Image (tube, one colour):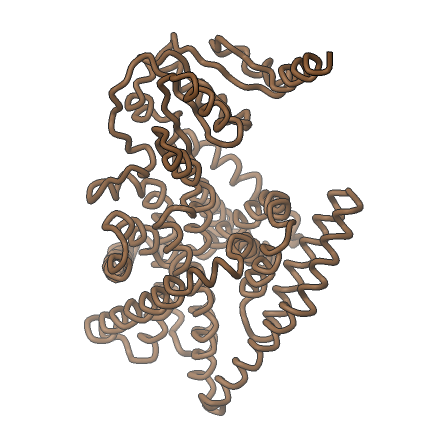
Length: 530
């Protein structure tokens, strides 16, 4: 049982079973990973399992997540975001920490040094959960998603001085000036190396591995870049994720950005699963249930404090709806709190009992956060509703209209053709960028998911003349078609397919019109050539 392979086998197998069950109830897969960790470490009492090795693997889940965020954050975009990143991030961490410190020290009565550590740790939010959701839902491109991402990036940068402060509090031989000088020097070396020599190495590796046309070599180059940048940053006293984030920013300026992001997506998700599994191993069930009322009270207090702080910071220059959603998405306690509490406990700044209590507050926060963030639009709609609120669509006044699902290249061609032929149509997309573009072109477009009943009702599917689905993902097409036919069995669906195998997979559905993309293109090519 000492083998890390056995640990991975158990975590993957049990979490898969959990998530299959939880998926049927619409519960986040993150909960399945956390429950897996708890089950293995506590109920089965596998004391010889190599949890430390798994935690090291799990840490690279955050590393690859930060790398993909770096791919979204080119230097030009960072410049444009400097106000919401630096100012909003600084205000959020500062005001949250101050209020939590006052609550911890003066109301609960915890000593000054532990209160400072608690305040700084609880001022941070969960990068792993929030950014995973924002990227998966494409909300990272919405106003609240952009502002939330900027604050999360600042928080990750803030981890560095927080860890240095703990080292200073635990070691009286170091002066504040020495810590500041050493940190600034290390930061200068890391950034200088990555943006000069590192940039050339990255470009060289990606170019030559891409030219080989061997996917495994290109993927090996990406892994080498991510892990190399992470290790360099860690050796200089920073977090692994900071080096990965900078590497992502550098690659964002190259032509390989999209390919790199798509190639590592599944690996990032797998490693994040390992991270949430490691969170579950930190749960002491007996202690948790014996103190659940205190844990829950502290959790609620922290959430309320952070939510109000974030709301008022964002509300200064944004709409009420954006501020509410940003507050809901960032009000939890983040995973970096584990590292802060572990370091403080090892250095004798926190008692073991207090550290265990704080870790359980963080775990409770991370368990409840997926429920909050997956329903963020529903909760925010009680305060304010805007046109781009996902699935919150005011019922349209139309009949005998065409519904176009998707607005990528094919969707745009379909919309333009319908417009030129004076046909009534409405566009639905789960990508806000596409919705905003369609509205800019003067089309009636909405942000939402066509597999949701409220959306089907609002778009008057039962009164439409046809529904054209332009998506490429087979799974998404099946979900949407099943939802449409369950809502209105006589719906006139026209579906684009890419292969005969795909049509065979969908033949059990009552789809009236299949359009084989390759066959239709072949016909056009022949007609043009004859």
